[in-house]
Image (tube, rainbow, N blue to C red; front, side, top):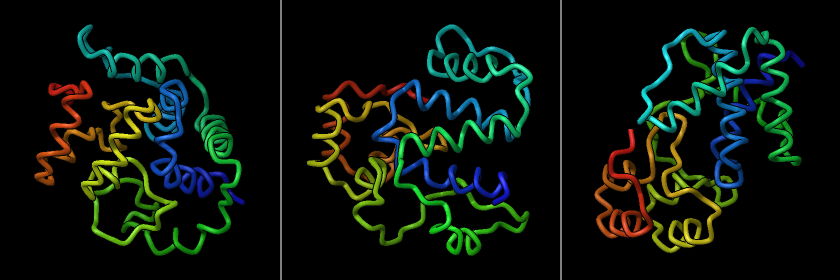
Length: 182
C-alpha cells in the first residue's frame, strides 16, 4: 500500500481515538501531521501565555528536518498503537468517496449531521448530541481533558455553545473548562 494513502486513512481514524489518547500522544501525532503537511517548522514561537500553542510548536520544532516520509511512517505507527484493531483496508472504499476536488481525502471539515455508529463516536460527537451523562462521566473519570480540542481547534465548550446546549455548557464550566480557549 502506498504510504500517503495510509497516512490519510490514519488521519481520518484519529478523531475517534481522541478520548483514549494521552496529551503526549496527541502532541506526537500533531507534530508529525504538521511535518507531513507543512514541512519543517518555520513559524514563530507562540507567546508565553499560549501554553497549548507553545507545546504544539515545540513538538513540531523538535522534529527538525525529519522527512515527510518518516513522519508519515511514525504517524501511522502511532495510530496503530492507539488502535491495534485498526485495519486501513476496511476504510479504503469509504475513503474514495470522501475525496476533495484536490484529490486528497477530507481530513477535517465542518461537522455534518450524520448517523454515527456508537462505537465510532468520540467525545465531540457526544457533546454535539448534548449527551450530558456521557460527557460528564468522561471528564470526571479523567478519560477526557475538559479542554481537549478537535482537529479544527474547537473545544467541547465551543461545540456546546454553538449548539445552544446550556446545561452542557454549565457542566463544562463546573469542570474547569477554559472560557478563553482558542
